Image (cartoon, rainbow, N blue to C red):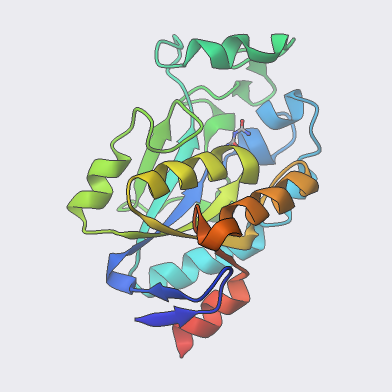
Amino acid sequence: MKKILARPYDFQLELASCALVVIDMQRDFIESGGFGEALGNDVSILQEIVPTVEKLLSLWRELSGLVIHTREVHLPDLSNCPPAKIRRGNLSTKIGDPGPMGRLLIAGEYGSEIIEPLLPLKDEVVIDKPGKGAFYNTDLGKILNEKGITQLIIVGVTTEVCVQTTMREANDRGFDCLLIEDATASYFPEFKKSTIDMIVAQGGIVGWSTPLSNLLQGLIN
Ligand code: C5J
């Protein structure tokens, strides 16, 4: 058991029961010309966390920890896309529309792929999810249970949408989640801060949060 300094109190990490979940580090959210930019966002703010996620990912691989990647993608005919996701916002550019990196958030398109520095290894699990949360309409829960995982280290984008939704879904399913603060980002820095505050409030009502430096420190002790 490794003691990790975290908010609201120390996280007791058990490597064999803990998976690293890397959420939606896809071109569509992080690079220019994707879904995130089509919604009017500045994607450079998400790019800032890439080196931190990369550092954690290589360390986790060295430790032989379980790595799970997720992608927010939909089938080309949109048959698995919750209809509200297409309707919502009355946007001029919607999921499935063509963009410079292919159709937005559609499986198989260039923009839907995970960015180069964080590409999954052959044996790593990649969960394609039609919802914001990674448990909704996916095999994630089954895979984690089969592998005896009870703790999740969570990183990725965006903090208040897919990261927070996944963390809440995981929490309700009994997983202890530790969010790595400098390995998650939002297009809205104030939303990131509020999300972290909400997660750790009331004794960790959703989970724990800490910077990567504390995780690294705890792992070497
Ligand atoms: C969003 C996500 N923000 N991965 N997706 O639509 O957070």
